[in-house]
Image 1 (tube, rainbow, N blue to C red):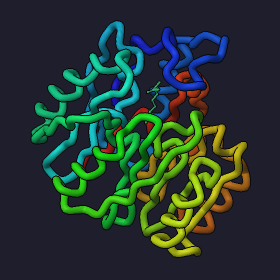
Image 2: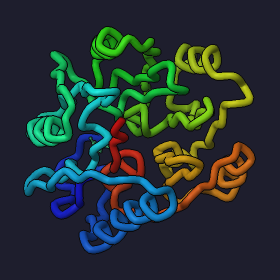
Image 3: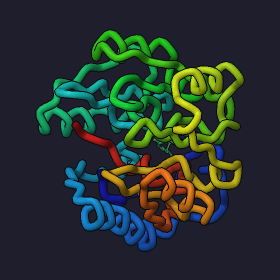
Image 4: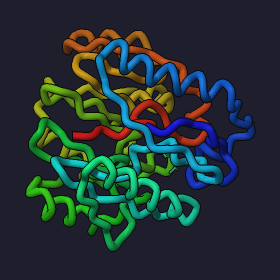
Length: 260
Ligand code: ARG
C-alpha cells in the first residue's frame, strides 16, 4: 500500500475523476488507515509500504504497480502520461522487496488488469488501459493461461473494477462491464454455483473492487444483499467507507497489491 499523503484529483483519466466535489485530504487519510487497520486486525495481513511522492496523486493505487507472481513482477507501463512517472517508484520498491522486475513494451496496468483466479488462470482485461498483447507476456513469463476479457465501458476501465476472484474458485463480477464474448469466457471457466454477480448499482459502488484475505472480504459499503450472498459462500464482508478514493475511480482493491 502507499499512504495518501499526496492523494488528490487534479487530472481526469477516467469518468469518476470528472466529479466536482474535491477530495477531503483528512478524510482520505482516515479512510485509508481504516482499510489498512481492518486488514491487519481482522485478517492478520502484513503490509509493506511504498513511500508517497508529491505530484503523483494516483500512486496510492498500488494495484496498478505490477502483476506479481512467485518471485517476479511485470511492472506497469501506464497508458496515460500522468501516471508514467509512478513506474520507477514502483520498480525500485519491488526490487527492494526482492522481485525480479520485467518491463512490458506496451501499455499494461498491473494487477488492476490481471487477476489470478483459483490458482490456475489469469483473468485479464484490455482495451481501456492495457493492450491485449501484454497478456501474452503474462502467459509466457509465468506459464499461466490467460483469458482476455474486453472491457467495453469507460466506468469499468480496469478489470478489478468489475471482477474479483475469491478463494475457493468463487468469482464476484458485474456482467454489464463485459461484452457477450467475455461473459461466455467467464461462464465457460467458472462453474455456475461459484459465480456471484452484482447489480449495476452495487458495481457503481465498487462492490467488485474488493480485497479478500482469508475469509474476510474488505470493500466499500456493500449492500445487505451482497453481505448475505458472500456469507452464504463462507465469506465475511467487511464494509468500509472509501468515498474519497471513489472520486478518483478506485476503492479497496485498487489501494492494495497482493504480494506472493
Ligand atoms: N485514478 C486512477 C486511474 O485512473 C485510479 C486507478 C484505480 N486502480 C485500479 N486498480 N482500478 O488510473
